[in-house]
Image (cartoon, rainbow, N blue to C red; front, side, top):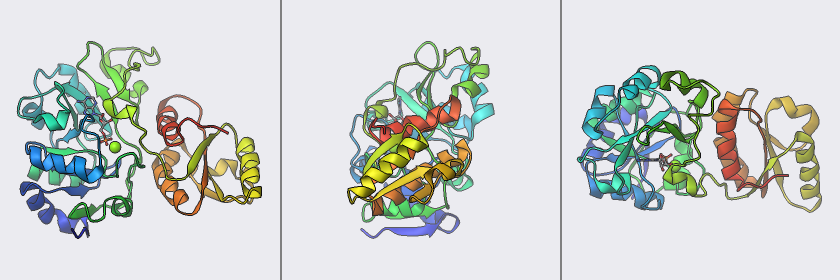
Length: 327
Ligand code: AMP
Ligand code: MG
């Protein structure tokens, strides 16, 4: 199969007809690129799992373009969903709700719930509006780092999908927050750019009470996602990263440091890929930096962010990428 990359605006009509014909389309969102298929078409959805090599027990998010569309894919929707939708949709928040019978088993991995999200990207929403409902996971090969550009997707899925809509770089840079509203009290299954602190006031719990953050995990979190192909570590400090870098270099290995510019003085002339300045810069660029790093290096050392909120969300992904290894 030939994989075409087309500017998102120009490729939209083609994308809609492909989805209607049971094919896959890659589309940009503000979090990461998505690999979409008609959520009502089980055979089309199966192609997503095949293209990615994704385990069948990991359910997909169903995407909406308007809040009202949720009624077609979910049932018994609690009032708080609409409160959250007003504040956070479109945006990087996925909400788990009781599933409508119209959604085939393959989308939900046989479960009684469905994950729903409205992306904050005009091309994505137009595609969804014209081919609703769209089931889509991240558009990477399973277990690899999620893609934040059309080129990343091409590197992973070339020959496996007919069309990639190119909408430039994703702004947020990590996957959405997954919030489960089906289990008594709301619980975050996957942390993201929409944090517990931001959600708490809308869920009627005190910010910082820890009530929204459960120990539960979304099915996908048990897999070693996000891993780059090179050996990777999180650095306990810039100093420890520098020392480790020097040891690796002395052994003839090719290390690289993924750090924000605030550590430039400590890291000196050592080879570094910048993660910008702020926590948001780090979130935006870390997946892309991991993909660049794995191409020319055999050891990757990533800065550790401390603190709650978005810093903790990014570190959730970094610790997965490095398999929990620190230096
Ligand atoms: P991805 O879009 O590749 O980031 O994957 C979607 C994430 O949402 C995975 O971690 C899934 O396990 C999770 N997810 C999808 N549907 C559900 C659901 N019904 N309940 C809980 N988690 C879900
Ligand atoms: Mg994924």
